[in-house]
Amino acid sequence: ALGAIGTLLAFIAGADFTAVQVNWARQHGLRSEYALPLLVEAVLLLLFGLMGATLNRPTPVALPLTVLVLAFTMGLQNALISKISASQIRTTHMTGIVTDIGIELGKMLYWNRNARAPESHVRANHLKLPLFGTLLGAFVSGCVVGPAVFKYICFVLWVPLPLLLLGPCLPHLVALLYRPPA
Image (spheres, one colour):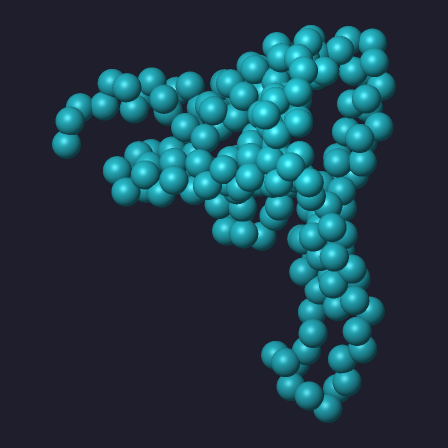
């Protein structure tokens, strides 16, 4: 029970962190409100990769520290994508994505009777279905490929991934550091 509570609290803390950072950036008129959380995500993923040796060491809540770092990062990532997409997409859990696929398929299969005005017809969003399908496919692919690669490469796999995340956020962070006072 403590492990589940600790993981949940770490996830919530990650989402909370993103909300605070994005809102702070918006209040201060920063060009990219997502750069700071993206930088923290990259650093945490790198930390996760470097912490691979600690998987068997329990923390005070009976969880490896790596699980808490990963849960915080997942909360951060989920909130970041939720903020970017105006709460249309969640990236760390697939039940919502599968539900949205079902809803869009249901809209496609719904028979609109001609007696009603065309503007009241039920219409599927033909852009959402491929997007949600791609997200689900990427998630399933990651679930298959990730463990297979991890078996042979271990945590070294996690070093290049955060470095890729740093690329888009570094110019914005440099601009923030050298920003003239308002």
